[in-house]
Image 1: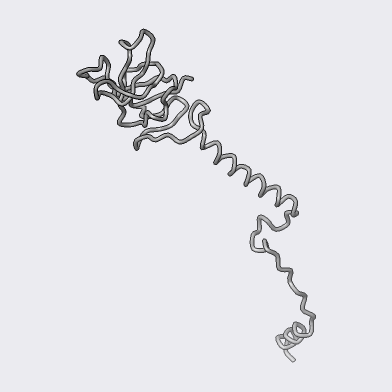
Image 2 (image 1 turned 90 degrees about the vertical axis):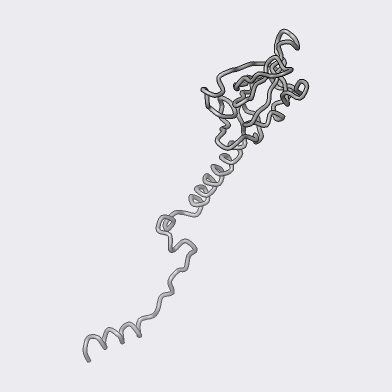
Length: 161
């Protein structure tokens, strides 16, 4: 008998040991980890995903919600809108209210000094309805109005209170 035949006979005669089939047998990084440690790792990963999702839903100044903005505009802690300081160089602070004056502006900013100091606003970048009755600072470009003393196209807004 040659050695090849002997090896084949020994393999046939040897009892076959069943191999353990495990769910994670193919993944070398999981093999050897005790089950409690594996569960802990999965819980930490799940908690991270859960926390990240809910934190991403927070807006600036801790205000929850999503803001409607134009493409290219950002929602940051410094404000909502475009960071274009060359175009949107004028600013005003006050309480945002709905309504313009005689068809000019969709909203107005109530400022100290009464109605003569109101800034009338429109925006091609931000949905101003989301900020009604809030004290805000706005940055925009001033236009000459027919009826409004101050007419501004708002490009960025920051909630103050």
